[in-house]
Amino acid sequence: MIARIVGNDYRTLAPAELGAWTPSLRVSVVVPAYGGQDKLDLALAGLAAQTYPAELTEVVVVDNGSDPPLRLPDLRPEGTRLVVCPTPGRAHARNAGLRAATGDVIHWLDSDVVLDRRSVEAHMRWHHAAPYLVVTGYLRFTSAPLPTPEAVVASGDLAELFEPAEPHAWLVDLIERTGGLTDNPHRAFSLHVGGATSVNAALLAQAGPMDTDLVLGQDTEMGYRLAQAGAVFVPEPLARAFHLGPTMRMRGKAPIDRVSHAFVADRIPAYRWLRSHPSRQWKVPYLEVVVETEGGRGQEGGGLGDQSDQSDQRYDEVRATVDAVFAGTVPDVAVTLPGPWDRAAAEGRAPLRNPDLDLVLIRGHYAHDARVCLTLAAPPPGGPAAPYPADGGGRGWGAAPYRLRLPAGWTPGEDSLARLLDLAVEEGHGLISVLLAEEPGHGIVTARLERTAAFARAAIVLREGEELDEAVEDTFGTFWVDGETYGFRPEARALTGRRGAYRARAEAQAEVARLTKEVERLRGQVARWREEAGRWRKSAVELRREVGGLRKELAAARKVVQYGLLSSVKRAITRRR
Image (cartoon, rainbow, N blue to C red; front, side, top):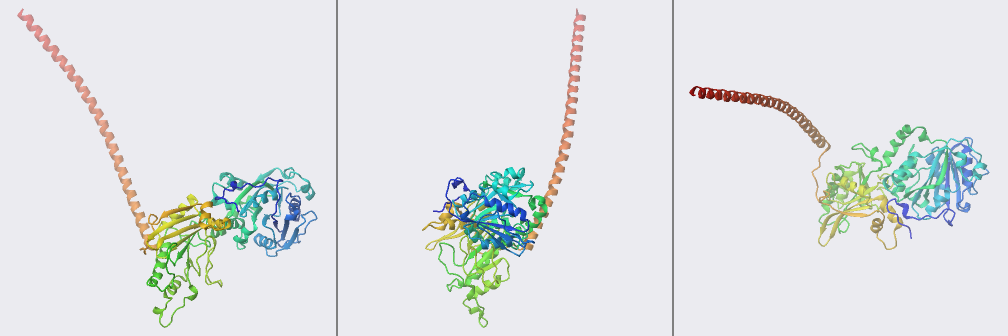
C-alpha cells in the first residue's frame, strides 16, 4: 500500500536509518558536464565512495560538447557511462542523460558537486518510503583548493577537505521559514535544484523532461511541473555535498533574476508577483475552466449537437458561460470546450437545417480566440486535455494549478472565480464543490474547482475500489460551498466592456477626487471653526475676568455704603442724646 502524505508534510513517513536497511531500487545519477575535467574527476570520485550499493547505481555523464572532449577517469563508479550531447545547454544535456538512464530514481548532479559518502543513501531511503518524492540535499559552496580524487575517496569527512564553506543561503532560509516546507506547500517546488536533487523516475516521466526553450530557471520550472504531477518535496540534511566554487546566481543575483523571470513568468502561474499585467495571456494559465456541455455532475443531460428540444440553446449557453468567465476579475484564465468537433461541418446549401449547427457556431465563434481550446473529450482530473485538432493545429495549456468544471449555461459573477481561488489557496483544499441547483428527478448540478496537484497525487495513492475524490479528501481535503452565495447564476449576464469598465473607473476616480476636495474643504471649515471657538474661549475668559472685577468692585461699594450708613446712624443717635 502506497503511503499517503497530506499536503507536503512528509514527516508522516519513517525512512530507514542509514546503514541499517536493505535497498532495492536502482538509481541513475545524471551528470551533465561542459569542460572542467578536474572537477568532474572529483565528482566521480565522490560517487565512487558512496555507501549505496554499487550494483544498484549507474552514473550517466553527459558531455555537452566539451573541447577537448571529456573522458572517464580511472577512479569512478563501476556502472559509469559517457554519452555525448552536442546541442549546447544544460537542459538538452540533462534530457540526453534522462533518455539514457534506466534507474527507478533519477539523481541530478552537477559536474562540480562532490557528494558526501552517505548522500545517495540518504536520498534513496526516502524514495523507498514513497514513490512520488523529490529529495534535495544540502549544498555548501567552497573556494578551497581542489584535492586529489584519491583524497576524496579516502576522506571520511569531506569537511576536512572543503571547509570553510558557505551554505546554500536562500534554500536554507526557505526551509527554515516554512517548517521544512511543510507550512507553505505552495512554494515547496522551489526546492528542486539540479545540483543535487533526486526524483522518482515514474513521476519525472509524468511531469516531462527539461524545458529546452528556457534560458535559465529550468530547475524551478521542472519543480513546478513535478508539483502538478503530485510530488512531495523533501529536504534531506544528511545528504551533504560541496559545490566547487560559487554558483552563477551567487556571482550576480540581479541579472540572473532578470533573465529567468522573463521566462518562468510564462510557465509558473504560482509566481503571482511576476504576473502583474491586468490582461495579458500566459503560456500556462492560473485557472483552466472546462465548460461542460453535457450537464453538470450528478445531472443527466444532452451534449452539444444533441437533438433534444433544448439543442438550439447550446450555443447561447456556452457563449454565456465563456463570456462571463472572461469578463471576471481573474484575467489569468483559459477555457477548454470539449465536444464532438470532428463532426462539425458547415452546411453550404441549408445552414439553418444543419443538425450540428450549434457545434459550427461555437467553433466559429471561438476559433480565433487564443484563450479557448477545443478538445474531443473533457480532460481527466489532474491530467491535460488533448487539443483538437491533434495535428498540432489545436491549442492546449500546460499544467494549470487549478481547473474549474462548470456546466454550460451557468455564469459566474464578476468576482466569483477569484473568491473560489482565494478559498482554495488559503485553506489548501484539493477540491471545492459548488452546489448550483437541486433538480427533482435529476439530482444535483455542481461545479468543481480541482487542484491539479491534489488529483495527480490521489491517482498515485488510489486504492482498489476507491473513488478518486476520497483519495483527494485524505491528501488535501474537500469542501462544499453554495453557488448562489458565490454569485453563480443559470442565465446570461450583462457584461461590462473594457471601455465601459474604463469609464466607470474614470467616473469613480473623478468622484473620489471630488469627495477628496470636499473633505479638504470641510477640514478647512473645521479648522476655521476651531480657530473661532478658540477666540470665543479667550473672550469668555476675559469676560469672566471682567465679571470677577465687577463683583469685587460691587462688594467694595457695598461695604462703603454699609459703613457710611452705619456712621450716619451713629451720628444721628449721638445728636439725640
